[in-house]
Length: 199
Length: 126
Image 1 (cartoon, rainbow over the protein chains, first blue to last red):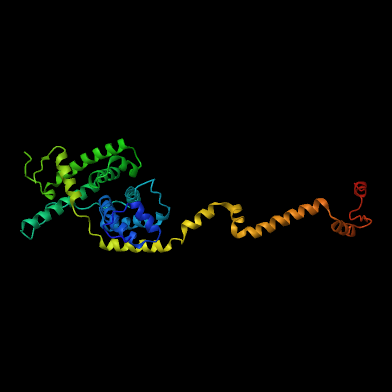
Image 2: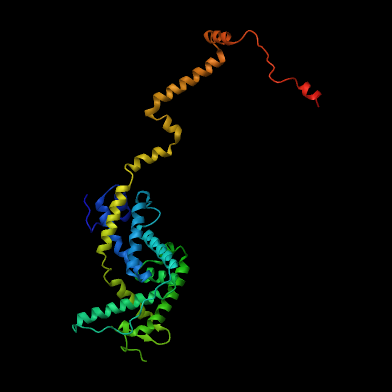
């Protein structure tokens, strides 16, 4: 049966077909996982080029483990999140983190169309969020991103990070508080200023 | 968008959740160049996979004895067993032809050659 991009075959089945030499399975898995892996790596690293390197390396490890994959032991997505987390941790420990510059104010909007302004504002909010995430301690950042941006459940996050569920809850709560504090100084970048604060 | 801000600890939980919702709903990053590289890696790794992996692995786990007595080696194994049994039988029974050969090779008398002088000479010299 030929595969297409919208194939709804389970990940493990696709991986087995890949190991058996199916080129189409390789394409479907690439399209299914690469953007997700890249998004996660980007949020952890705050650097697109480095995130692409990590994403490519994680996917390469998936291809190499495909012949020995045991579907009953892990989900492909969970396994990939774990690999990316470890690769990012290795990189962050190997280099001093480069802080990103927070935008002091929202940039000028050249196009005064409402749609363009809204898109610009959203881009700035996402940039502010990503920058604030890089200010968090490593483990808090991982937990917050996995829980609130990747939308995973705490038990799955616990498996990815190699810790207990209670530790995940603690990291997530502390991470959110720290993130809120960091973002409080970014009202302009967030585009929320002066809407209603009572201040 | 209406978002409440708080000066003491920063954004409220609701504002932060709203920001998370917006981030999750955002389009994934454009990654066509990366996906092309990932797919190239996939094909290369696929080509490097050993052929017929599934068929070869069980054979490797059966051990050397299983390999020796595989159907392909049955004739060789049968010859080896027959030769072993014949050797044991000849050694114990010594049939007449073999006994004759043994007697022909056995010398009638054994000459004793003294290669080392008597130890007493050495002892006497101190």
